[in-house]
Amino acid sequence: MQTRSKFFDDMSQLMTNAMGVAQGAKAEAETAMKGLVDRWLADRDFVTREEFDAVRAMAVKAREENAALEARLAVLEAKLAEDAPKAAKKKAD
Image (cartoon, rainbow, N blue to C red; front, side):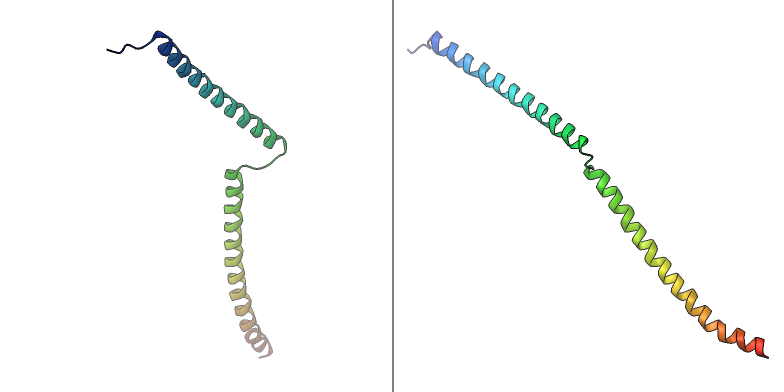
């Protein structure tokens, strides 16, 4: 019959605890680094992805509205050009 040695049990427990501490330190280091990078980016006035996407959507909407207004203006100018000779003819009569 084999029995486990208390030494090996203690070493196993020590290694398990050491891994837990290492994982905690890793998570803490990642959080600190993320905070540092976020502060650095904020100090340089970079925009967030959400802000960029919002402005991009506004620009796309503005382009679409401009295209619609250009088409509407072209129709009105064509109608004006068409009505101008008729108005001149009426004035001459």
